[in-house]
Length: 407
Image 1: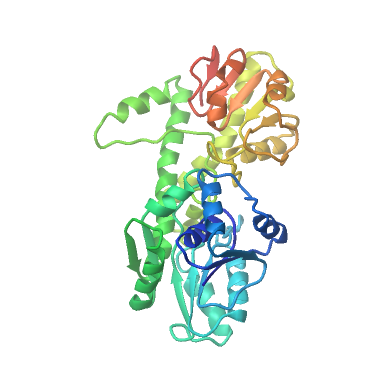
Image 2: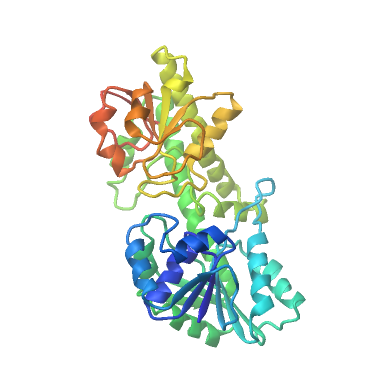
């Protein structure tokens, strides 16, 4: 039996995938309401293919509870935020989950950390926590790190078809855990040391953050000198060794917008490029605010309530709002006492911000400027509804709008 701790965007799909493979799984989460909903057959978030996977897993051996189980294998998939002041990882959720596991597990248990952690976290925090409980690592407890590698919107597919990394102190135990993941992972699974596993996940997301920052800086340069950034990127990408990403209103989610800070926090004197990229991407919501101001001035619009932000999630066609650029933009507006901007997202079913509309037509009828923050399929299919508005298109998707502005 596997006890999976944390039933969020990573833990729940992972638990379902193991259960679908015929392995007995108990999913544990401290959130009693979430556990009750799962027992009743209700998923906490929407994801392509997740409902089908859920039903298939429920027909096999899977249980949901708030209690930690006495078993041989544990997977920890709990949040790993960073401390905004120091930019360092806050390991409190991992340590709390680990201590609860250690309170119930048998000697010889395998504990796998799937949560994304900064390089050195296991040496600094996890090993000492285990040793304080009187366990000998490698004898009483086998410790591994298998960082998740999936993205909302494509989770089920990527669980099967993304390669995996398993960090371990013991090659034999690593091979056994590799065999566990081969129950559903069809791609290569690399067994390496723990520090390399920690670092590789953070490096992957930092690489992407830096490349996005280059595109965003290009957008600012081109706007300053009245050039079309999208045309320039299109032409540059014709070169066989160039692949510039698309600019956007900021970087969100719990990976790309967070993981680079772990390196900045731990290696402040060595991360000049990484820090600059983070600052560029974090500056984009403020850049969007400046573009909104320009459009309002051009058209003589003085009432901020005539501005509507389309999209609350951090990427298209998902309901995940963690670290979303729209929420970052709303914070910037709040700092400048710009209250009353309207917000709509077809995938966010609950009101999470002020002046959030739940009906698209009502939203459109109340505004003169539409700021497309997220390129949901919904807005692509409803271009006719905004074609007569002033549109700030941060995603370069508006094709039939008469009065469209880009970043």
